[in-house]
Image 1: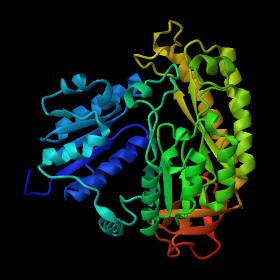
Image 2 (image 1 turned 180 degrees about the horizontal axis):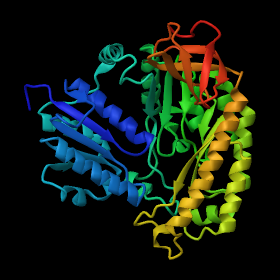
Image 3 (image 1 turned 90 degrees about the horizontal axis):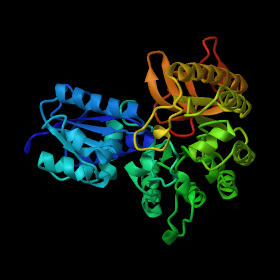
Image 4 (image 1 turned 45 degrees about the vertical axis):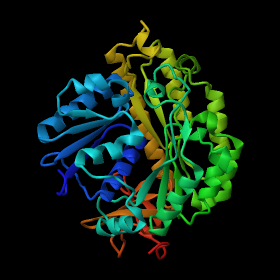
Amino acid sequence: MPGSRTRIAIRTLGCKVNRTESEALAEALLGSDAVVVDEADGADMVVVNTCTVTGEADAKARKEVRRALAACPGPVVVAGCLAALDPDGLRALDPRVVVESDRAALASHVAAILGRSASAPGRARLAQRRAAQAGGAFRTRVMVKVQDGCDRRCSYCIVPDARGVPRSVPAADVIARVRALAGMGTPEAVLTGINIGRYSDPDAGVHDLADLVDSLAQTGMTRVRVSSVEPLDLNDRLAASFARAGARVAPHLHVPLQSGCDRTLAEMGRGYDTATFTDALERMRAAMPGLAVTTDVIVGFPGETDDDFASSLAFVGACGFARLHVFRYSERAGTPAAARTDQIAPPVKAARAEAMRSLSDRLVRRHLEARDGQPASVLVERATGGGAVGTSEDGLRVRLAQGGARPGQIIEVTLRLRSDGTLSGDRRTTPVRP
């Protein structure tokens, strides 16, 4: 492989953190002059970044590895959470499988296979890549990993075993990264991590996520989006930091609920009840009027009765969520929940998921109707045949008439709810960012 530009495909499964880590790998490989391609067919190497949150996720990961082996004649490097938990099982799939369970070493390991060295490509190279791929693969919303690991030990979750204890990226590195992105013209940075509410870098005087938000609001980044924060981390300090940042922080939070039934929450080991959850939402909504909140809900957790599910459904409906991500409970070997004998039958789980998703549809419609005729700041992400598509500050997809809109612009619009249930935006002013 030395002496030629090797074509590498990166396949990513699972959460936003995996996607962020795959993007970091792509940047490091850019520094080694490898070519990152979209398709595994014709690639010289494939990297599969795996998820292991459920048994179903494990099966999908192994299927993706087999697909890569069939499409690519070269090595298939397997990384991510399943690589950390079952490296021997993955190696047994094929002699061409190379397992890298150390995320920090992934880029250097891949580069070593290529016979090169990997390094951060630097601002000039990234700016060049951004210009070359405007409207294409380069994101106008860039994910920035600030934290990894979790020690909360929910009874259904294997992530603490796969990713270890909470660890925070040094605040200086996060601030420098966001400032550099702002300098390149990137309009939005999305903070990601496994449990970012546990962020802390006391040596730098950044004691929690609130301090980090305060610092990032001063970097020149047009908009910082905080992704998923656990309910117990939605405290007064974080609410105050959102209020201080104003428009610099997107009024959008993902707050995982998992169940609206107190008994089920206790058996999940979530550490809060529905009253605590309600207080947390009220605290954040008071700090940021117009805040859109999305959530995760698991249905069919072991032992969940019809009454438990009814309680969950009623509570979720009363929370005013903008959207639900609904999951049928899936057993993950090695967790306490998987060992329980009161597993819910698949048809019951399917029916409950259908009912919860129907509720989600109604909540989405209610949120869209509330936004109809309201102002929004829309980040243009890509051009389409007849216009453009972007994302509002509260996370809504919006169609725009072309009107000179280019990826990377933030355009002030009035939202209109269309007959097909989608949103369009009537432009109100000139763009905030050229």
